[in-house]
Length: 318
Image (tube, rainbow, N blue to C red; front, side):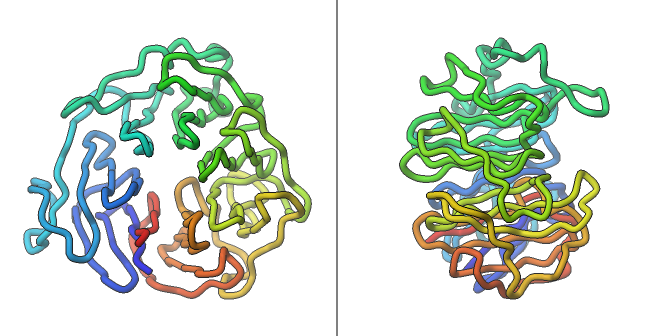
């Protein structure tokens, strides 16, 4: 298994074919779709490349990249608005990015353009942050043609027409931190209210808390027919742990084998990924350990350690 890890000091591929790109740069967001990795560098550059082991070069990443790499990332677009916070490539070929101040942008050729209908999304006047600053787009996903955008703090916004019209689907005060899509309209979300699951493309949600030691959830993923979610006692990460639950329903079970009794801090948004097809999964810890599972989170083993502070993680699917 190969895993990409975005860090404060470059992008790492760990596992069977370790490598490193973009040394000295803060890789602030990461998403993999097929053979393309989409990353955000320093909150200002959208970068695309093929990170698979025998990939041909795509171009030159420019200043800050490793000179001896044979498959350098290629800057696709720059952005000088509010900092890019997350990126997502849909199955239909759209590339979306979320920004600080809760804006949504889409890649058009070699430029990023704001999706102005999102600026008028319903309920926007009620979005907030606990510390009084402007909210951010924290996570983006897609499933069965629908786009789902998690705003912190603003709930989950849904569009099924390519971003023209938007609908609020979860209460703003449920404090959503991440949303992920799976095949066939499956979607999962991590929030301060627990784990939310959907089977209709995020149009409606069911809350799941049974089995959790605390409901404050920050990261979520789909691995096979299982949801993985991190939970702790609050924003400071007290007693942080990882849980698994069948997507079809039932209580959550704490993941134990191969994991620490408690994580040092929250396993944060974007730090867990899973493969809906195979059940493979991986996570990165606050201290830069990467752990992998090939059985939907039942058991885990370490594949890397000592990485710089993590920003995100993604499986490289075969």
